[in-house]
Length: 116
Image 1 (cartoon, rainbow, N blue to C red):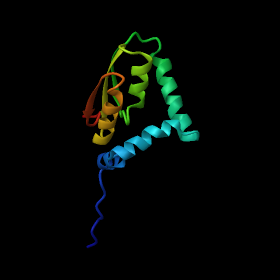
Image 2: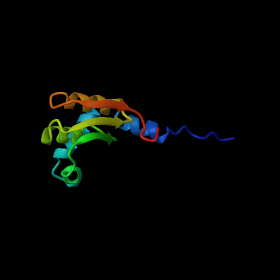
Image 3: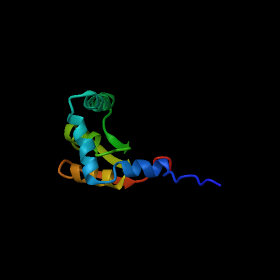
């Protein structure tokens, strides 16, 4: 009988994809790229800001926060308006996000799955 090769779960693959501070930093730097990926990421930031422009503030959850660029953008552009909880499956991403935001404002970090 032929054995089935081990295949990591989606959760394990996602967590491993950004499992180090260097990989989190590379993802954050992608926002500055001049190519399609950078333009896409910056367009998401603008869309988020446009959507929240009429919101007076309050509690926000950045699910799948990655390196925290969205949270940092809000903390810089609207200081004191939001209490932002950040959630990601990757410890490295959550650590990077919390460390990057520290000089701007406070985020409330959590590692886990949104579904849970």
